[in-house]
Image (tube, rainbow, N blue to C red):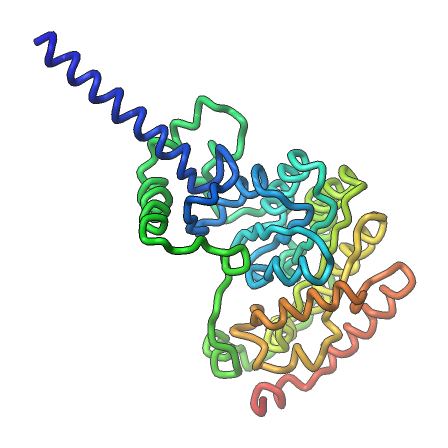
Amino acid sequence: MRKWFIGCLSAIIAITVAMVVTVWVIDPYFHFHKPFPFVSYRLYDERYTNDGISRHFEYDTIITGTSMAQNFKPSELDRIFGVTSVKETFSGAGFKELSENLDRALRRNDDLKMVIWSVDFNAIIRDKDYDIYSGYPEYLYDDNPFNDTCYIFNKTVWYEGVIPNLTMTVLGHESTTLDAYSAWDKELGYEHVMAGYDRWEERAEMRPGLSAEEKEMVEENIRQNFVELVNQYPDTTFYLFYTPYSICWWDYMNQEGLMLQQFEAERIMTELLLQCPNVRLYNFNDQYDMITNFDNYRDREHYGAHINSQILEWLAQGEGLVTLDNYEELLEKERSFYLNYNYEEKLKNP
């Protein structure tokens, strides 16, 4: 009996040690160390992977945002700006989640000097703590070694991280590149945009603007998730741009009577960000040829990868840069164009 007990205990210890060593070496989400050159990595789940990238990759620039930023290619950014970048996007994220991730990265990496951040234009009028996700792997985000057991002995980590990485390594497959990480490739064009758009034929009455409570909500959203962050890291330059949606999105805002509210929220955010000396704010809503061309979009909001590449070029060239001297003129032109556009004609004759 004693021999059997010792044998069982030894087997349990051996299995436990083997699991710990395996997860430590393979480390699919880079929680313990930077990637090893002899391991092939499947970069997949953003909310498991991004914090590890922040911790252990070598970089001086981060690309971040929601699905609107997933098709950015760090290799293109590196070539255009002469930097070393990583991509950390969060599909469907609110401003708070993106801001908190950047704060963790900036606290850990003194070399982080540039951030490229896609600012979802439809997320400005939201609560500062907006979040649609639950069940985050918070044990990956903190520095508590005792809850790493949730990582090492996690069935999901093994099935979706460790085992796929081991399989890729054994079969000699290459790791997912940062260019391909989280990127999507879907068909673009009028047919695909309109397939997901249920248009109200009867227009709602245009709302005059934001209420006092809504104005306060917008200000709190921007101050908490942008202004406080960028002011905390004055040596980092933040390239922020409003995501340029298709003309179909603008038609939706017009049909729902929400456009004046959006313009007012944009003004509030713009004026707050322009007070931050280390923010370079860009607005591409005057790129009318792009926005009115359905071949650039897969739905009302999402543009194709070629637009992400074009945006990097615009950022480098200063195209679309918003300043204290020009922002009022830009806002007025934007307001005039989208309030007076012939949406009926465009949607019927693309």
